[in-house]
Length: 388
Image (cartoon, rainbow, N blue to C red; front, side, top):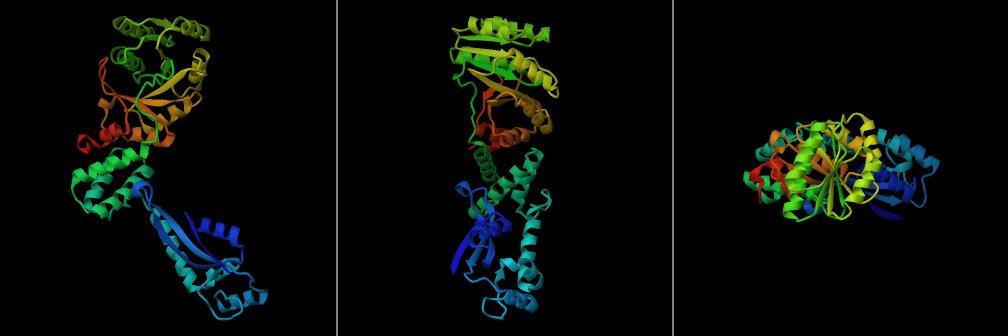
């Protein structure tokens, strides 16, 4: 007789494993819900532990009939009721057995508790944790991320047993930082010669590009050139030409892929070529198709998707999906100074598994731009008091 313990995220998954390894005649001896801790003790997950035994001699039809008659599963070779459940008779037995019905009700209750309304699930938390939860709701952090943070925060709060609000803010910030730390941050890598900036109209792509150029020239001492494909707005071309003149940077205007190839050849000796693109209606897929007709995305190009933090999260997701035809290396988030809600930034990183290059907070060139990091994002979401 073979006895084995199974751990699975759900009871149905555990049953599946048991059937695969021990067969339909396996017997469940016990089951319970266990809490598995994640990385560094955070982001714990609920799991089911089930102990099952392989019965080398399956029940006979007569024994199965007797089991049904007695309203309880029957141990092989006996008519005496027992507190084990035979998988082959699972449906009939659970309908008859008070013990099994009680266990199933407990599991059902557990699952219902896991799916209660997310805004009332934390009513029984200590007041300091409820305040953190409300703060995350106000910041419009996604429900899944918020619940992960709160679950981990509760574990730490219970362990440390501190009511200090500054400690809670620091812990919350660290949990946010850890949740997004595995992606790429920090701006222009200088591993690719061409830095392409794309995004919808009105997010500040041209101004952001000028800030990048100023940083590359003044801070990194790079030879920089401009290419603009924004031929839909004369003002945009003139704006970039003004920045180019101030920074003493050459600029080329490209109307098609042939122009782009000639500009590439002209700037072959430059360290970085910053490419501006037209801002168009992001709901129109043709915009991205037009970009591909002008810009060669196949080689030596680093692409940043520029999004405004004043935009709705649903719109941001739609914009990303429209631009997913081209590879997006990192986000640039603009207009930090024009909103007080930053959860969409965190949601996008988590949802699309893409890091952030820069965050901008004003119109001043070359200022009002910061290289992004998980620590900076956590600080922006929770405020200055979350330092440390």
